[in-house]
Length: 165
Image (cartoon, rainbow, N blue to C red; front, side):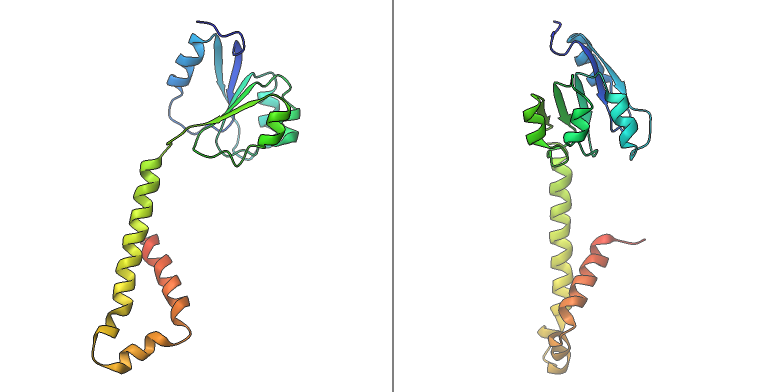
C-alpha cells in the first residue's frame, strides 16, 4: 500500500550497516525509495545537500539541528538508529512538523552485557585491592589508606575494564 506522505525519497545519512534490505523493502511497499549517503562521516555540508528533497531520513550520529532542518523543507520524518535522539533538535523538528522516532531496544542486550561486565570487573578489582585488609598484617592495610588510593583504584579500574591493548 502506497503512503502518499512517504512517496518519494528517504535517505540514510549515516551509513555503516552491511545491508539496508529491510528498509528498502518496507519503503518500497510504501512507495518510497532508499538512498544511502556515500560520503564521509563528518561531511555535514554534503549530507545536507544529499538529503535535500528527501521526505524521510535515517540518522545515527549526525547532529540534526535547526540549520540542518532548514536545508530540508520537505522532510517529514527522521528515524534515529538507536534508542536516543540527543543528536536531533526535537524543538526545531516539532516547529517544522517533522516527526522524530528512534529504535526502541536497539542493542539493549549489548548495553546490559557491558554494564554487567563493568560491575564484575569493579568487584574483582575491589576484592583484590582490599585483600591486604583481610590479612592480620596491619602494615599492608595502611598502604590502602594513603591519599593516592582512590586515584589508583580509578586508574586500575579503567585499565582492568579496558583489557589488553
